[in-house]
Amino acid sequence: LAGNIRDFCYQTNVGDLDFQCARDYGLVWRMGGPLGRDVLLVADPKALQHIFHKSGYLYAKSIESDVITGVFTGHSILTATGRIVHSSRHRAVMNPAFSAPQLRSFLPKFRNSAAKLCRLWKEQVLKENPEGTVIAVNKWLARTTLDVLGETAFHFEFGALDDSKNEVSEACDNMWADSMLHPSVAVILFRESWLWLPRTLLEAVRYIPTRENSRFRKVWLAIENVASVLVDNAMVEAKAVETEKGKKDVMSVLVRANMSENPSLQLSKYEMVSEMSALTFAGHETTANTLTWLLWELSKQPRYQVQLREEIKRKREEIAQKNCSAAADFSVEDLESIPLLQALLKEVLRFHPIVYHVVRYATKDDIIPLSKPITTTAGEVIHEIPIAKGQMIQPSFCAYNRIKSIWGEDADVFNPMRFIDGQVEHAIKVGIFSNLMSFSAGVRGCIGWRFSLIEMQAILVGLVENFEFSLPPTPTEILRMPIRVMSPMVKGRLDEGVMMPLTVRAVGA
Image 1 (cartoon, rainbow, N blue to C red):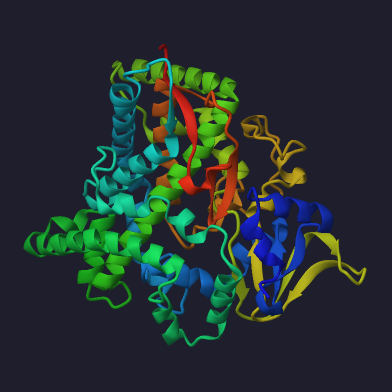
Image 2 (spheres, rainbow, N blue to C red):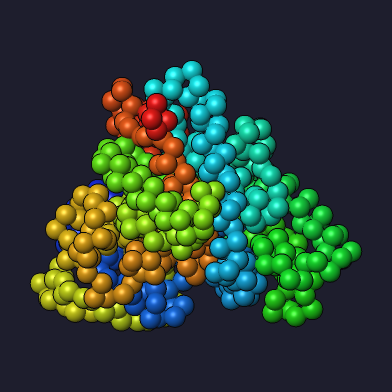
């Protein structure tokens, strides 16, 4: 009843099934969905370009995605697909908070949080064993990025790095593992039934006490409690003084939208809280997850750590000479000019795409072009695929990211040098950051990807300057678990949730 599409939820490692299907059937293949519905899996670059860039909004987010995301982000930019609210209105409101000048102004706070993390590791974690301690780096990175988001977006200190037991960090911890790991057939069929529910009833689905809903509601309520107080305080302050008019941080733009007399820009208090919840989720979890995978790869290939540390040192010397001060810190332009830093970020986003699948459905009949012909079950060779209204499409970013004709013959290997040596073929433009689809797919849904990119650079530089990372002395097998976002878990210890244990040692210790 659940179809073989359910197999994706039970892969030992994200991508195993995608890679095998792409080898066997080509870059587009069909699988059976729940109740006999066909689902089209797509990794072909020309088809992806058409779906995400050339067809406008013909391919909408799935109802399942909207309902699930809406449980913990309300009516936000992540769920604004036209069925509930207008996504263009939310993007118009939020865009000023993510302009290039505004993002550059966040860098000192990113660097300060990275410095705080380094100090805590040295003073607390490594104090008793400076030669190396096994640390669950993903937990610390999630706390760091949550604090960063609170300070930069909401002028609020979550205090996660200080280990204060605030309800938001506790609620977000292991949310995906607790809710989405290995869904039952009943759950899959229940989600399928949403296709036939009236839109008015979809709002009520979130209150049904399933495992997923209960866990997501915990996150929503925790963030709502904090966000509501912050919004109320910000509104009172904005009405009392005129200081908010020129500010472009997230809280200020949300306040102005709430007070706007223009209906096309006005947001209700509920929508303001929803946007804060969406940013809290998307702005710290995925960033921490990506950095976690990168530290794992650096632990397996320490030569890249050494090379990156040397490049950072040279850049520091260049900055000090240029500014006549050893205390001068990195600018965004400085970070972007460190070749291996950029290559490592691109490669981890390619090799470990946090968003490995999304689901779209065709809102009208269409024809999807292909970069390479495929052979149908009837033996016909076709160069395009006719799509009927309502057809479910599941782009496979993990399969696209392993196409050898694009990424090179070593596409199945983590090799950041491909972005330095010019090995990547970009004949068909599908991604906004070095052709990486997992970034492109999120642009219309969440405009904060540039925020995350600068944040990752700032934190990674701080960590590599101060610490050496290696695999733990006790062998552990890390699995790429499919829990809506690709997350690391230790084989045989799935009950511990998302976990990445690495040995951390201070440089020079």
